[in-house]
Length: 152
Image (cartoon, helix red, strand yellow):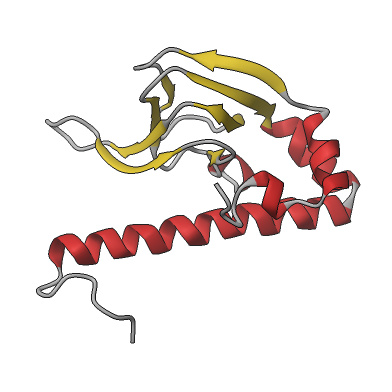
């Protein structure tokens, strides 16, 4: 994936290297819940292989899938913004291998090195903006009388 929101595109090599010192390899079986909406956001992941679905709790129904994430993409951004509570849920849709990061350790590193902290904040902000835009387009496709059409 060549999205500007992937870690390899968003962070310069020295910042990536610094962040990767905190990474640990994890794997999830298909169907494993990574996190639940409303719970403490104490970690985040970068997908190495597989697919993770972000979903929204819908009372009386299965969670509604909002977006699917794959190789190189950030899973979870709520860890970066107080009160550090997940805004969505996430589930492995296939076997997933990922890099896992302790949110508190990354926030501490960001506080100790303002340049690194700014780079991480810009990266996470771009992810949030991209996902908000994608959600807007999906909502327009679902509910607007003529589909998403052009942006005015």
